[in-house]
Amino acid sequence: MIVQGSGIFVTVKRYRTTPRMAIVRPMDQQLDNILITTMNDVPGYEITSVHGEVFGLIVRARNVFSNIGAQLRTLVGGEVAGYTQLLSDSRNHAIERLRKAAAEKGGNAVVAMRFDCNEIANLMSEIAAYGTAVTIVKR
Image (cartoon, rainbow, N blue to C red; front, side, top):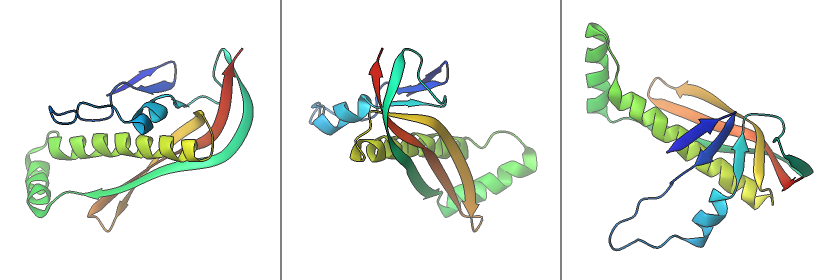
């Protein structure tokens, strides 16, 4: 689930737990501590170092039957719920990959985050989340 407030995105829960797997992995905890914001700075924090551009990229496609259902939906109008869910999941996955890229560069935040979406061969959706990895400290 993504919560947006004042241009800051915060991941509340990013992993599934089952009765067999109720343990939070250390990498998940580390990635939860990486702040992502669409702003160029973070109020109350100072940027102490810039690590460079980072991105999270995912390309996803629906199956043939979903594509046929979506084409039929365009005849009568309305929301194509399968594609809405696909794009929502893809955005969340791209943000997770963005967090991982920022951690690999040594950052604890990503500023100026943006999304870019494209279609490949009218079959697949590409979602890219990108921004600048930085290290921030509270003032």
